[in-house]
Length: 123
Image (tube, rainbow, N blue to C red; front, side):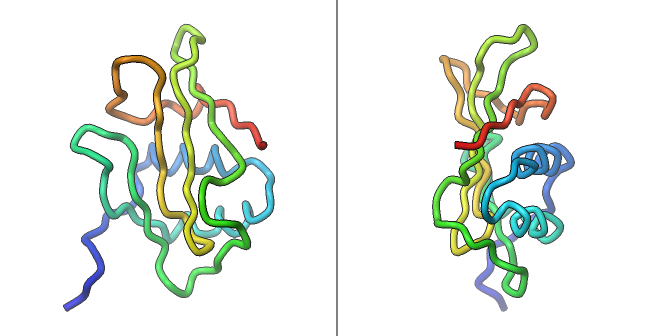
């Protein structure tokens, strides 16, 4: 028996969003990109939330990056070009640990945005 939680593969949309966010160049980005093939979703942040916790198994190369949010943020606009929210990628111990979709306004999103609506900036 294992203590690891039940996991699932990244959905195609989760994969595309993470690829977009990790396409920016910053220290550790290459290693984080190489983790994507091994990354699993461990749990959503709520029953309707598109934000998820992630797990990268031991043995996959770690990124030399501090714990917390990576230095690349995805600004999300809606179909009309209005600001809608942000996508954040969290790292723990050099491994992808969460994908967060924070939104502006009263209505919470129930799915991730199309990557074409995301502009990535490095801070």
